[in-house]
Length: 79
Image (cartoon, rainbow, N blue to C red; front, side, top):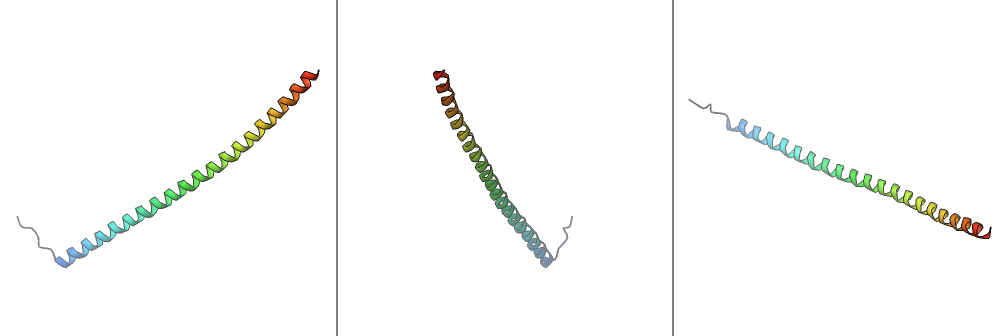
């Protein structure tokens, strides 16, 4: 069984091409991971802002309900 002798220059070119493909794929994966990280961070910040606004609105409503309850109690006591 003989192994075919390949041209070393062609083999070097194929190894270099494969190395470039590996480096390009690694760069793409890193770039994609960074973009996904910042997108998720932005999305979480947006959801936190929305929930904080709702929390403030609920606290204002609770304060109003307490005030109204106090008014109703004073009216009931006077009757």
